[in-house]
Structures are given as C-alpha cells and as structure tokens.
Image (cartoon, rainbow, N blue to C red; front, side, top):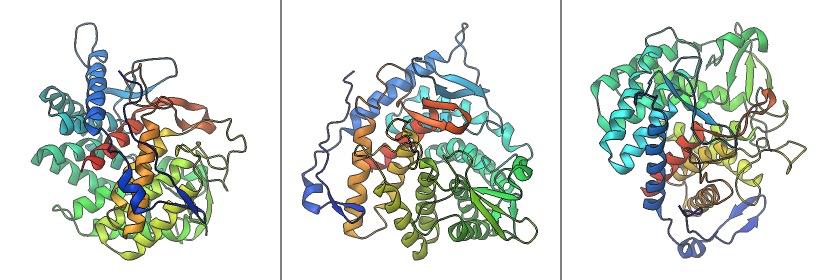
Length: 404
C-alpha cells in the first residue's frame, strides 16, 4: 500500500497569541481527504486481524481481545475480556465502525460475537468506572448500527451499575474503588469524564432521570477542582469521602503532579464536548474551548503530542498517538458547536492531526494495527511506543465524523 494514505497539504497557519488560527480562505483551499481510501485501508487491516486472531483450527476465542502490538511485532497481543481489562470493548467497537464504513456482513458477525462477550462483565458487580468504556465502545457502537433492543437493555443495566459508584457528598463517581487507600480518599480520574456518556444516554433512553443529574454533578465538580487556572488538568482528583472536601490533585500516569499528561487533557476535551452536546449548557462550551486551546497551544509542529507536555526530556521521549486520536475525534464534533472562526480553526487542527497520523511517521504499514507510537502507562514502563487498540478506535471514530 502507499505508505501515506492521505493527500492533504497542511494549511498555512499563523500564531494568534498562544492559539493557532486559520483563515476561511486557507480552509477552502485545502485539498479533500481521500476518506474512502482510508476506510479501505482500515478494512483491509481489520480483515487481516480477524484472520490472524484465529487458532490452528480456524476458530476465534471471543473471550480474549486485541490490546496492543509491541514495536517490531505485526499481530495483536490479546488479553482476557474481563472487568479488570478496561480495553476489552475497543476491539468490538472498531469492528462496528468498520461495518458502518464498509457494510461487510462478516465483520458484523464478528462484532456481534465480540460484543456478546462483554455481557458477562455487565452482569457482575461493578468493578470500576471503566464499565463505561467497556459498554459504550461495544454495545454502544453496536446499538448505533443495529438498534438491537437487547443491546439497549444491556446498556441501561450497565448505566445503573455505573451509577452505584457515585458519592453524593463528593459529587463525582469513584473511579478506582481498589485505590482509595493508595490515594488517601475518593479518587476521580479525568478518564472518567468519557463514561458520563453512558449515564446521559440511559437517562434519555428509558433509564432513571437521576442518571442525568449524576453526570452533571460529576462534570461540575470535576470542572471546579480538576483543572488549573490555565485550563490544564490533573490526572487524579482526591476528595474526602465523608465531607466531600477536595484534598489534592495529582497524577498516576503522567510525569508529575504538576505536569499535563497528554491523554488526560485529551479525555477532558472529549468529555466536556460530549457534556455540552448532552446538556447544551453554554458554561461547558466556554470551558471546553479553554481546555482545548490549552492543549493546542502546547503541541509540536506535527500535531502529535509527547506523552506528557512537561516531560523535561522532550523531544527525546515517546509520543502518544492515542491522545491525538481522541482529540481529533473530539474536535470534529466540537467544531459544530462553536462560532465560524473557531469552527474553521478546530476543523483545520483536526485535519492536520489526521494528516500526520496517516503519514509515514505514524501509520503502520506492516502490522494489523492502524497506528504506531502510542504510550500507555509510561511511569509503570507499560506499552511505551506501542500500537494500542484505543488509538485505532478513536482514529476510526474521527474518520467517520470527518465523513459526515
């Protein structure tokens, strides 16, 4: 295949303070992205993956799912589908999006089989906030494609389970029940913002309306305590579980408590864009623009962030392609909610990110994954410079949003 699958000239940009601006004329001059070519390449990789995942008898074990590909490897490393494996839902989500893009019935059958494996997690007591990721990315994408009433039931049950993590004294969901002692209190991580979408969805699809209130409370409390004045965020906020008082902001996967972990900032952009969509409250739109512009102002020229914006070894440290995918997808939604100037700017930024992602530097020409160079948990020495399934998931979502 042609290693550079997109033909898009980067739009000439000019600095306006700390924020990158682009003019309407420049946006109109940009060549169109060959979206159909991208979908065809992704579909080929999905098809190759499904073949690679078969055992010697030609069968697929749906109770394990793709997680990552190490540097130099070409096929997916798989992990068990379980509550402790937060990435279990991303692969079925990739399959559902590939089916939506290409209409391949074989892919739909595999998407259904992988999605069904998630139900064992929903039927068990809630483990942590990642239940949202697990269900939204599998059953959620499947429901978008099929409107299957059984999928709706599973999602409603999962939303009720997720809501049991809510502490009304604090005003947020407890992200990691297993880590209360480690952090010294009720912990809420920025990743948790993504999972509020399951609560919003349930509240407008037959679930209890209190789920909406819980999601709003979580978003408001996080907005108050989880961010610094410049719009950057902590990874973890710790609260007193009894009084609800905010104790401290810190990190778990970032460089330091005072640094800006790239994927954490990406989760914030994606999460508050979604909260604005679900509430239409202008305070969230104003806030997400501030958070987004803080992220954009720190990016290197190729628009793909280093794993943490404050790592002192930059540029001699790993990038995080997964953060770029999350933000590109979010910007392609956010651009529809803002004024013309910001809309053009966010659209231009998202396309520049996608151009880099599909360049020789980041596109995986030889393996079953779409993308290279994500960073999972650098402080733990885990998945550094890997291909990771959630990067592919948000990349595909971004491309589907671009097609719209």
